[in-house]
Length: 559
Ligand code: SF4
Image (cartoon, rainbow, N blue to C red):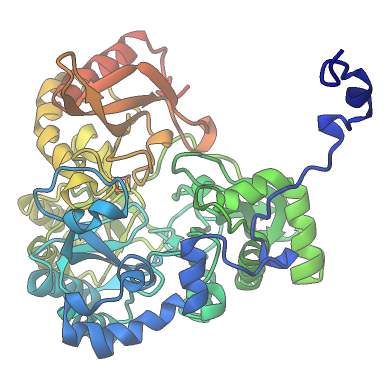
């Protein structure tokens, strides 16, 4: 017998596979002592803090031009100043890695200006419009995080753009990158008839204290915040959200949610079950942010949003660590806010608690050129109003319009292509940037929506009166979900679809029945529903007509 055939004794002595200690890979959590970078992004963040790039842009790159820009600044640290490289015009390949980055990348930038839920006075709006016309080929989009985005920005012009923005109290700092991005605030804060409280003071204080400070600007990944005393924001999909709620003993305050986010692995935020008084919100925000900074995963870029830590720990442990290690005190238990049954996009005319009116308009998927914004501001000024806010549904709201000026302003806004009573389709379409400017895109989205809208309006004109509930239609250019497809009634995820002859065409994977609020849930991916871009109108009409035919009275799409 060969020694190799009688293995029974050796097998018996060999430790069982499962009994071996499992070597768990470090997730790079700072709080556990792992400070060595585990990927390229962590490395360049450690080599030089990304916020330092601002001075290099002013002193070197804007003077010496695009070719002088260091690669880690260009594709990395620039994001911390709200700058992304823009896709080359007409390049229809897709991003497969750094090898084709030169082809894909133009010498122009997308620039994001954060709004942080602030009221925008007319001087701010005129500045935004002027920059669009002078430096961005008249482009200007309102994002679904209430921010503004320009395209075609040249590095040479960035210091002058910053100078103009900062003169009116606006900034691009931390608008992108692994840091606290532009924050959501209620468009009607301080004015809504039914808000629990006005949370703007807390939001303003968070921005004033923490934005632009290096200690809060090297997080494991992007970090999205929402603070509102009214449920008119998609708070469930933010990394941290404060939602207005009345406590039976303590009165109005805010309910704290953590760990929401969409992208390719969607999670809804979870309640920690605490009630936070308004004046403590900035401190609690800081504590949660530091917890994420210290305990968040820094190894895999695909696994380092806050949602993954919250999922692994659960809300109880997050609360315990928050209280014991960061706040050094207990938080007050609190009730859940009553969820809303429909999205509040504030389009149309509504009464405010001061007796004045808010008027909301719907640019198509947030696109409003600088020249159109100028006309909008002129109309607002003629109506005697002085302030405007953006919404996370890519809309613009004029605040505090007197009764006698409402009709005049509505008529003027209509005339410049910003209707206050838009069709359901104009109101409900939301898109990301898509192939027009985004390097990650597979398909056209915003331009597709703008072209599709008249077709939808014509095809379904007979349904307008029957549609007493909104049917939201969101388009993404890739799986990254910048346009929140998983929470739309009809969500389209851009991809290339192989055709019978082996060629590939632009199309979308369909997700149906997603919702925020009372019907909270992610849309169901309908595997067999892949739609070519050219068939979008047909598909949407078919789904909507079926819904109307089969629904029971009052039934919402996601129910
Ligand atoms: Fe770009 Fe994809 Fe985001 Fe659209 S969803 S803006 S294509 S990354």
